[in-house]
Amino acid sequence: MTTITNQFALEFGLAPATFQGDANVFITGQANAGARYWARGAGDMVIYQDHLFVRCTNAQLTARLQQAFAQTPGQWFFEWSTLRQLDQLLHSFGWQITNHAPFFLPKGPLAKPTEPHLRLIERDEIAAFRTDARIHEAFAFDDDDPDLLGMGYFEGNQLKIVAGANQNGRYTWEIGIEVLDPAFARRGLAGMVVRGLAAEMQQRRPDWLVVYGTQFSHMRSMNLAIDQGFRVGWTEPMFSPIRRH
Image (cartoon, rainbow, N blue to C red; front, side):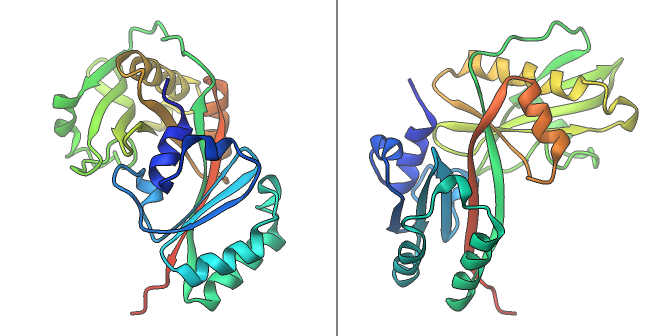
């Protein structure tokens, strides 16, 4: 059975059992082929099971990060004093935090909703939505991270809500969701679309993991994931050299 530790192991070049250990881990290296979109940069930190797993392309920076955070509990890493310490350390090397986010995984098999307004959007149909200027998150339209499946909530032939899933890691595909018509917001319909798509994904590819990512400030998005049978799987800051213009 594929678990998220299989994906992390690929990205860090470590054994899956490492991610069940009792120590923070720091390595120097490039992102490996098959890494998730979010884990392909120069620096990545996965906070999983209360521990830090850090990869960086700069060996000196890796050593300093290990010196600073080897004993830091992962569950408290996002306290502001620790984030400020990380930010200052990175800046001393000419690096910066570029993003940080929570990622959700299904707690188990999801039940498909029975709703006649829901329709699957197959891979060969997705390109037709490229010209819909309302869609920014559901489909990537990217050959490197191909869109594989979508689901829409339709009123007649009008698409009101859309979710899409693209493969962005060897063992993962990630969901994006958008409410295209404000009249259909805050009615529980977006959650139904997410659950319907995720359940279909689980059925079609049980060897892949469904991932739902969002931002810490997006309360409705996080609550949607929780309400539809997901739980927080890990959190992840990303960092890279500062680009000078």
